Length: 131
Image 1 (spheres, rainbow, N blue to C red):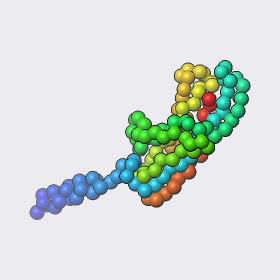
Image 2: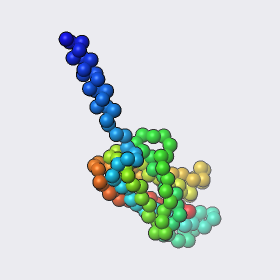
Image 3: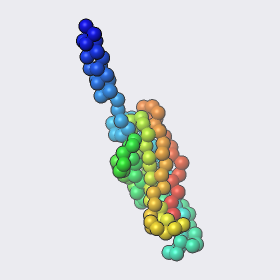
Image 4: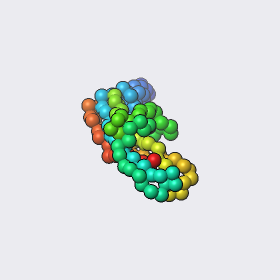
């Protein structure tokens, strides 16, 4: 009888652990934000302009993945949107010119956020990049 109870508990644990959803596509939540650019001259010494950047790639990493999971481009006003996400932790990033050491020439500017519930619309602070 003891072995049957243990077997039943293991089966229940297996079934319920399979129901846990990892961060990613398949949910009802949305992450939005904007990319703000500081536009420097070719020597990266003088700031020429600053603006919300259109046509910039923004990447998202689901949970603890080691590579990006999806990508979108910013709109004319620098805004981006990732939809249909499940609760979980997400890392967003855009590439920026490295004006400090110049090597590597591009570096990711990251923002990590957490969706806590279904139907959540999460607005992220601006991702600030150098161009």
